[in-house]
Amino acid sequence: MLERIRLFLASLDTQSQAQAPLDFATALGALMVEVMRADNDIAPDELTMIAKLLRQHCQLSEQSSELIRTEAQRLVDDAIDLHRFVKVVNDNTDEEERIEVIELLWMVAFADGKLDPQEDYTVRKLAGLMYVAHGDFIAAKLNVKAVLGLAD
Image (cartoon, rainbow, N blue to C red; front, side, top):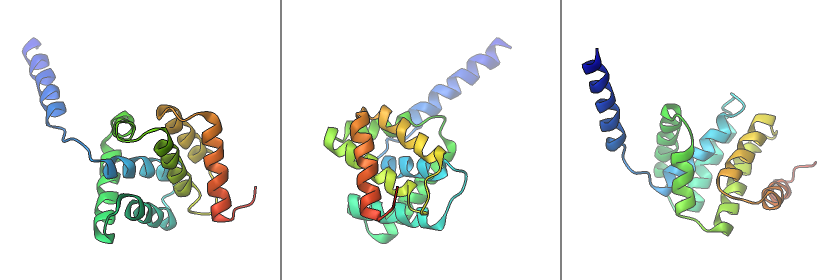
């Protein structure tokens, strides 16, 4: 019995070591996918928005952005938590850039024309994990609503 437990623990250690490092675009895509999935409704507009934002902000081709979005969806499906993705974003951005990431997350949340409370909660949680001040979190939300022409 103890031998089986030891082998199991050794296999977990091997799996964590084999986990490939994430690039910034995939980590960003994973955070956007998490916002999209928060309301348990994956709208085509949200999928399109994620690919568009990856193209624009990570200088990717259309095909690359679609592949990264698909990979991000797979990674989020398999993830236990979001810390791996948040760490990559935090390690590769400064305060101003993290606020821009929050704006991108709001763009995904509003892509289907409505904001679900779970999407709001998810963006709020991610803003906290990325050390974005509450005032900047609110300003990012208002900025995106203005850009998208959404009323209060």
